[in-house]
Length: 284
Image (cartoon, rainbow, N blue to C red):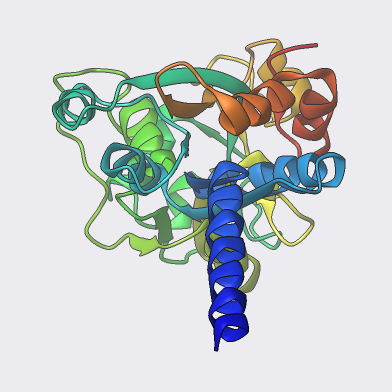
């Protein structure tokens, strides 16, 4: 009986220590679907170098990541937009101090099906398309087909950025919204798949999702300006009109495994991964 009790005590102690160690050596990262492949690539390489560490990365949108950070259910939030003032106020009420870290740059590609002969658009035309003022491709020199609008869902940082910078043209007083006919899709990959199979569709996503199955259009700030392709070089040179920073948010100054992950993301090796996943490094 004594030996059995001793065995149970040892196992309980071992289990307790194992869970304690796991908590110390594991972190949860949630947020931007635009960044999820990048975050997973960082995590995989980091865990290769540090096999005792465990880093879980999931998407769900920038808003989901920031909400999780505020509620204490993740250690790092990935976001393709700046945190909002109301989110900062809510976080501080809960004892969370959001700390913003810029880790990469991204160009938002506007994509159509490769069979579509429209290959360049102005920001005004894009605003007209996505607010529903332009409804047929023939208005843009294309076929006589109704335009099928694809957007990320409202919780996505990509959705917010596109609305504020394209539909509302950076005007804080503008109330422009996506057309009611726009299909709100849950991920960038869903938009990519739909554009690939629909000759009338148009959508947008981080340029890391571009493949031969979609055609990115060149974008001009206005009709007489240069039409610019969404490429890394054009984002670095600040020529592409729809580009943005990508962020990690932590609770205060990073510590422990969180700091190790952030430091890796900003290291030369981490920034090489940024480039390899078709984003633009912030550190050379």
